Image (cartoon, rainbow, N blue to C red):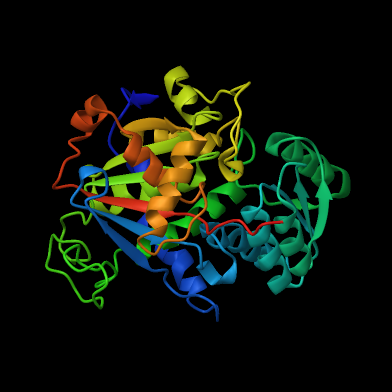
Length: 368
């Protein structure tokens, strides 16, 4: 399914106050003091889906935690711990990676942490959480049920909830999570961050203004494809890209066909819950969008597209051949690019001159 967004409108001062390049730089300054912080690499795939080149930001090695989520939950936890150093334990629900980030941040802050996982989250994630010192509790058959259990525990015990989704009355913490994600996009603005497409394995060096990695005002990308569960990463991408590079880059939100909560919310003009679908893309299997993410993407995204599990698996195999070892979830943005039909390509002006940013959000999930 492809849905060209009729509500598309420009980035505003209100959007910038919520999320943008300035927030990303603030978060990055904090991460720069962390001993495991390093900018993640970019792989170039020339000619992918008929484009000039796709640039895959590879988050699989992020801070030793395996995904971009290392930048979100941990950032929010550290901010909360600084505001209330003697505060109660942290609690969250997770499909895997968010919990690992929260647990890592809690361990660094010296605060106990409990993570709720649904029954369908691979045990590999539970083992990693326990290794970080977190308490792991199984609850429910999907992410939403584990999230409800985490919220109930927070209310019952007075624990601090660190969710990566937002809803009416709960936005401050998930906004900090999203601002943390902005770090990965800020790294792309560094001189020399992107190797030129003519030589994907060449040493990184500053590019001319207007070319990928350049320092001029021209955007380094013509298109940005970002996968979404509740939408936090996609909204962080939209906020950063619009603030830094303006309205020109086309932003595409990619979701599993079995969990299209953002595209259905865009159609409805309000956050809606979707029912009935199935997907094996576990970290993207979300039935209800983040309120903040929907509100931003509803007018900043150009197109929504859904993909099948098989298309995600195929994209992961293709990217692996170019040095990016990712899961199906991690390669979902590439799957969206590969799946686009002729009408959507024309609407996005996607052709052999296009330079596309993809986010490889996570490495392969460890087999049980």
